[in-house]
Length: 313
Image 1 (cartoon, rainbow, N blue to C red):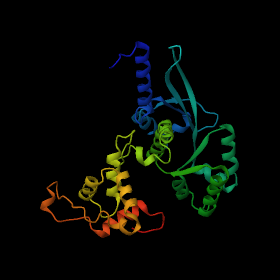
Image 2: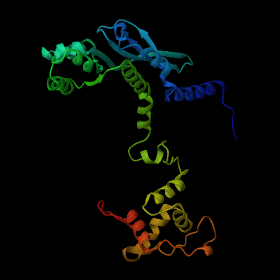
Image 3: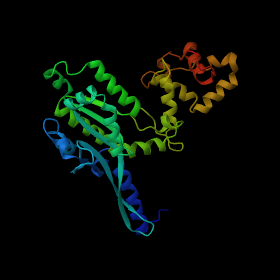
Image 4: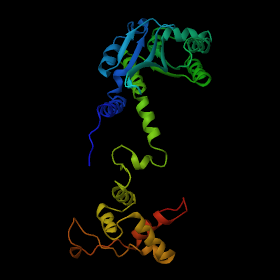
């Protein structure tokens, strides 16, 4: 008998469903705020950033940063229902930042061996954040100022920054590339709580049983076990859907199949499935003389019984 939910319980359930929906990709973008230093939007590198963020659905703010040409992020948490029935909302700072250097500035830092020190000063001004470095227009600058700096010298300086300060860098030449990178990072940050929740939901031994990706089987309780059993059989080389259905008609569960292998022993186990008849295209067994056969039976037996991780099917 179904009992109607009381009003507080109904509100709580609705709120839980709303929280789950707000975490999902597409919905979560509206809670991310991108804080942009005005210098980041100057020509020629910043023209397409705001349209890209608008298309993504993120909110943005133009606020001078402690470090020029820098972007930071924070998240507005959706309102939560308290134990007293009230609603609370808050914000949390995301531990990521983007810093942009133009090609000429990078060349000057490299020639004076100051790039590592400059990057460290940025990290000190923005503690607790993972820094992504954009170098804009380096190729164009070097074309105009030939011989300004060596390629090997530049690569070495950028590698030092990556190794010593754990900083990734992007060498970009157009405003579209800059906008795409900012948009991609913003999307990844927005979806981070959802992906963390997914990882926590499925432990390592259940990730293939409960994955939501196409081609995977969701198992909840006993629901889905039959489909999972069938999917396992089809993954074995040479096992088609018709063969899997034929095996399942005799051994409807994986446990019954394993029990048959154990009962037959090592001598007869490999041929347990050999004489099972296969229906073709859903027709009656009498219309076809196809059988599983000893070789495929041996492969399936080895798949489920062998304890040798290097054994080939």
